[in-house]
Image 1: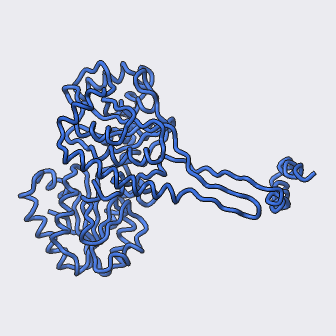
Image 2: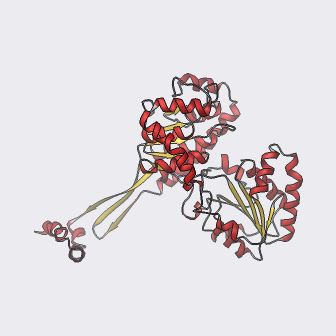
Image 3: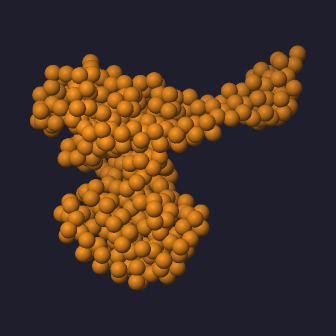
Length: 424
């Protein structure tokens, strides 16, 4: 069921920067839709919503009544799980914020390094075949901790004009300011350019299908966006001490996300490789969503046996997975050598499934090799570093001669004179 890799060069060659975000055909497909929404606003959004979502809407904005009705359709257990997910993520992000503000004194100059929130953010939350209320938590909670003034969610409507109730409950729990029943390319265009009903935002975040990703790339000249989001990925590093049964469960769990996903194992143990291969083959037929899992594992499942742990680490760094599980006898030592991964999970009790929902870290992570240059969403995605500087006469004097020397070298004499004026 899972491919056994002998030479990993072809697999590695398909990684970043070869992503759907740069696919010319996709960009050409979404371009007229984006242009139409930019020019015609709500009218165009309604037309595309009817065309793609098969529903006519008079109003896009979700009402307070709709949110209250949504609460009646979810269980207390589900709502409590969302609250706990938000609580844990806010604890981590609040600590990150506290440690990101600091003061430095250098020779009479005080430099305060602080973070300022951007004013408005649009969060795209997928709908369709499966609802992802956890995406609301992961995108919105850090924005709220950051202090973003206006946080908007766009999510596709069902054919009856409703929105998944658990998604609406998640929006309410996270105190989203506005929720719109708009999906797909038209949602990205509305957020980027604004319409009569949807005021534009300064940044768009959140995962979507290949068309949503292409639309975000297209509008990136007029609005800030997060990194491209591709299908989910898991890579597991294993040795002779690893539990093949747990490895099989984790490979299968990520495969159930669906089309295009990657579930890979790199191991120094032939025994573990063989046992995982056997267990996956035995377990999948009896799994719920077995057809989806089988398809993903057939296309994106692989087992790669290497000669030593350093070779496994090198492969992981070159592959740069979204999720990397280190299930070895020395996970901390291995983790120290990992430089490229969206998230690193150590030991038998840190499965990706737990971090997808409630462990306190974000599940919006770089895919397709982008972990080489980017990371998961945090408060830093919603904030701008700003330095505030105040120097005394002594502080300015300490750099007086250096400023004069550099200003003269660059042919900017008035820079020197602006400093000298303070000492006359």
